Length: 223
Image 1 (cartoon, helix red, strand yellow):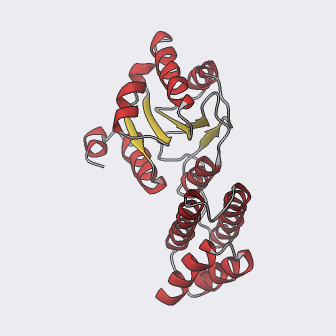
Image 2 (cartoon, one colour):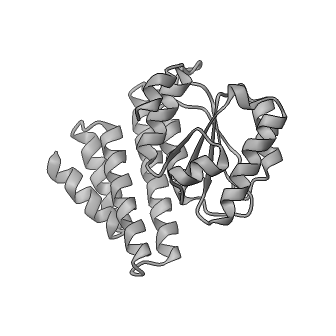
């Protein structure tokens, strides 16, 4: 089993889509937890991002990595449904509003995180990219959600995040919302925007959403 998992990370890093899908299929047949397989594919995707930052991969490679991940997620979801692992009609989790903020169109990390959230039982409102602050406010009014995830990969997105937080406050919604920012962010950016949490790791975002949506804010503080 460990051999399949290690090979999966390497195949994803090489963008060998046929090998990735074949290894995932083998892993499922061997009884490996689907979430473990998704984690290995995600780790391989991170390597693609690292190679992109080094100038060894290009934007088209990042897009291809996102497409491979999407195919893996669809395969895992189909197999899981066949084994009666379906998302319950009433999810135990709060819906999550998710979007790339205004002036930014990057969505690879967003799409991967949304895929993992949905696989894990969350209902996600995907607002897309270049989303105006007012659109997040409108979604918060329409959706009984406690969580909004804002993402951005350029510095211009920081002001858009800050504006979104301010508009939520002006609309009287900030008090019931927990805001998580992701992308090219850190603690300094979190403080500047007024968000509650920041993360560059989709696994941490998943755990944050789980703990926040079940009302365990104290546990979320330690994540």
